[in-house]
Image 1 (cartoon, rainbow, N blue to C red):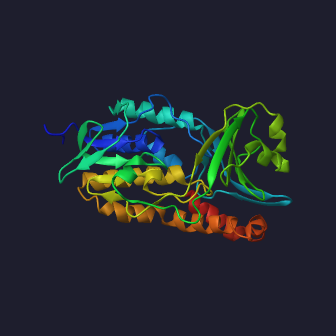
Image 2 (cartoon, rainbow, N blue to C red):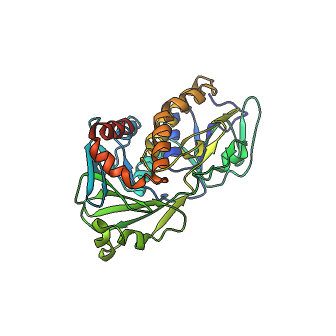
Image 3 (cartoon, helix red, strand yellow):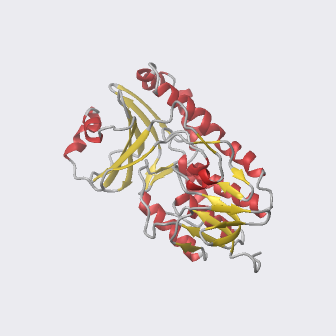
Length: 344
């Protein structure tokens, strides 16, 4: 497919898990690919590290099977209230982000994906191709995360809106996992996500307002206060603001994939599953020369996530916050249905 006037079929800006998944999808479709990423090593990120059941088969079709811990459901907890639901749609997996990245990078290299250690600072395009980072490609994917430079360059970034000031902070502890459920502990100010990622390690991710004090918030949750005495297995790492909005997901021959395409919040743990599905849809769109079709596919893929997550974040930010876990406990069928819908 590549002609003399092109260096590559596809330029992927961003070498995180979604960028690598997009590059693998493109190679499986027969395209030549260069991933442009300034960081040459394995990339870590503050996140919950739980792959929902729907994400595991998406990885498997790429030929990627990272080691981790089984996740069989979600448990909402607050004080004496608790609501558990075991997935009816398969099994998820807790995977350390660096482990996932390494597995995807190895598969991409095996398939011949090239890596260029560089930043995408400026993008120009015409009717037949895109120029960025000293390369000319037929297409370009912006997979460069929450603070996407590609999104700004193509002029589709919108202000975050009223609910744009939530952040995440994550740290690991040398503690044996005590459950095969993703625990979500609701306190007055934060949600604390407990994800087992190895047989001797759990990750704790807190979601809340900017400037949250990780140690103080963790100590204020009785069920997790003991972790203050546990040995840290990583340093604190933060991410945010989580809310990112776009007016559209493609301009010409540039398509946005993953968090770069717009993001609501991490409260439902859907980011990677959505990113992998979007990557597949974006590759399908460019292979068939119909980038406009990606807009419809993106909307379909992200609809449930956006509706349910927006609603849950709205409740979490309202005076009804203390009622969330008691309601989930009182309405187990409704709670389970929402969990399974998001887990697909």
